[in-house]
Image 1: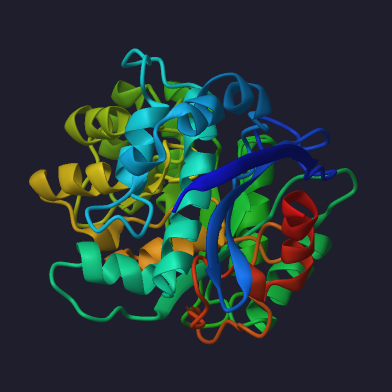
Image 2: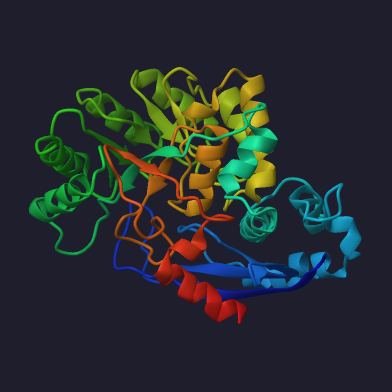
Length: 390
């Protein structure tokens, strides 16, 4: 078997929203299709992947470096020991050939996007949902996976004319769809205004539901600490990404002022950067949350290394709730026993969300038994993918 072709294109996911740092009016992503010569159920196996929102499409890097390296490699060197399926680890090593360590930047997004498509193809060739394949290979001997995954609704962005009533209506819409945890942005307005927004949402949440807040790395130490001291008065699910993701000293300082759960990691793009957060960021394995996103950080191959590092430092995979809101992380959460996954019920479509017919019940979804990542089960998304691969 062999890979015949790898296609990519840049797709828009623009939206008139903003967080504390950027607006999404010109946001793009890369969509990738890996075409193989394998046929299952009368159809050619094609693996699909795309990168998460917040980082732009990386087509140039893919075309210039990573796709050619795969296609130039002898096909037999990319297969597993049995020779009848792709080996994503070997393919990852080929993509990283002649790449110096460090300085991960956008390179990690390009590789992570292709890696997603390769795992989709691998699981389809095996005739399994990806989450079950992962449970068998990496789940500590578990023959089956837990198909139930906790999900929270991410939203609460800033946009012109959005007042408290609209913010509350948005959050109510998430609750009506079965979510028990909702998230909103902070840091794009003065502290007093953000506290008003937070109190407005907390005031309409029913018992048993919680609110998380996300500053998207906006604050300096002084501002981050001021928010931490004000937020201590509330029962928040977490206080997320207070300052620059690589400023581990800032994170450690803020943690010393905030005894409740914090979350960060979505903008750390390698196992080594994640390890520095664990070593120097003051994160607490008993209460804090880690948000590493495989689609932005070299893919699942690197994510497996990150999970191994976390175990070595006393962290459970259950403390990981990835950023991104995509089906790849849903499969990882179900197959490897993570704590859950982010969800964008109304944003970044058609790339966010779940397969058609999958509903949120009491904060959880149940994974459908679809081969691969399950993209074929989401009609609006699959139309975009088929347009690339045919």
